[in-house]
Image 1 (cartoon, rainbow, N blue to C red):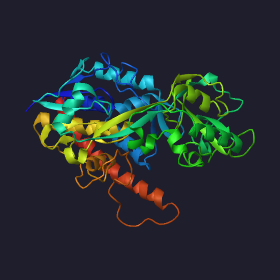
Image 2 (image 1 turned 45 degrees about the vertical axis):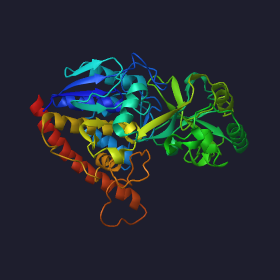
Image 3 (image 1 turned 90 degrees about the horizontal axis):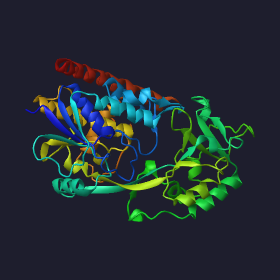
Length: 447
C-alpha cells in the first residue's frame, strides 16, 4: 500500500486528480513544467489554464455537459468550485473569467498541505509507485516518447483550434447590438449582424483566404466541436448560417428583424474588456484574420488581444489501453486523465481527472472502490466509452446522452425529448448523491 501518488501535469485534469487525492489524506507530488517550458498553446504560469474558449458550455442539466457539471459539483470538484466563483454572463452557458478561474485553482492547490508542487519537466514516467499522467494532448519531447514506449505507440491525432479575442472598446457598437438568443440570459452577448450581401462577401473572402501551414492537416481528423471556421465554410455557402453564424433567436434593433447571419461575441473577463468570437476557431494567417474578420459589421476596426491559432492534439487509443478506472490494462498503478484519453472538452477532462484521482486514491489506500459510477451517469458513461474494447473507430468525444444508458419506457408528446433528458438527469443525480455519500465517509476518516 502506498499513500503517496505522483501526478504529472497541472491542467484541469491534473489539478482535479491532485485535489481529489488530497481529500483522502494522500500526499501528492504534482509536477508542472510551464515555468520551465510552455507548449505552443499556453501563455500563463497558472495551473488549469483555459487555452481555447472561456466557455464551459451548457449549464442546464437537461444537456449532458450541464448534467456532468452538476455531477461534479455534488462530488466536490475543485474545478467546478472555481468555475462557479469566476462565472461571467453567458446566457444559458457557464463561462468564466479565465484569469480568475486559473488563479483560484492555483491558490487552492498551492496552499494544500498534502500537495507538493515541483516546477520541473518530467522526461520519463516513474516505473514504481502510483502515477497519474495528465499532461494533455500537446505532450511532446522525452515524455511523449516514453508514453509511446509504454503504450506500444498506440496513438491517434486530431486538430484543435482557438478563436480570436478582441478588445471590447474596439467593437463598433453602432453596428453591433447586445442580446442573447430568445432573450435568455439578458444582454450577455455582443452580436454583429450581417445582411445577405455582407455575408456573401465575407463568405467568399473567407474560403479564399490564406491559411497558416499546419503539417498533415488535410490528412488528419478535425474535431467537429473545434472545426476551423474556414473549414466549415468550405462545406457550403450556408453551413456557417446553420452553425456559429445562425441568426435564429436574435432580432436586430435597427431593423426589427432577424439578420441574415449573425456573429456572437462572448465576454471573456469579468471587467468586460475582452470578447471572443464564438465558433471562430481558425488557422488563417494572422494578417488574414484581421482582414477577413474585419469585413463583419462591427469588427472593421477591431483590435486583438489574441489571434486564432491551431495545434495538433495527440490522444491514446484508450479502448485498447485503459480500463474504466482510467488505469493501464498492463499496469494498474499507472493512470491517465484529461484530453489525452480521448475525452474532449474542459468539463470532460475535469471528470476524467476526478475519476483517475478517485481510483488512484483507492489503490493508494489499499481498498476496493466503494462506489463505481455506471453508464446511468454521465461521468460513468464517459469512463465506459474510453475503455470499451468494442469501440473500433475511437474518436475524441464530448459528453452526450448517446453514451448514457437509455431510460426504460417511452416518452410521448411535444416535450418528449426534454422529459426524457430530465428523467435521465434525475436518475443520474440520485446515483451521484450515493457516490458523494461514500466519498464523505472516506474523506471524513482522512481528516
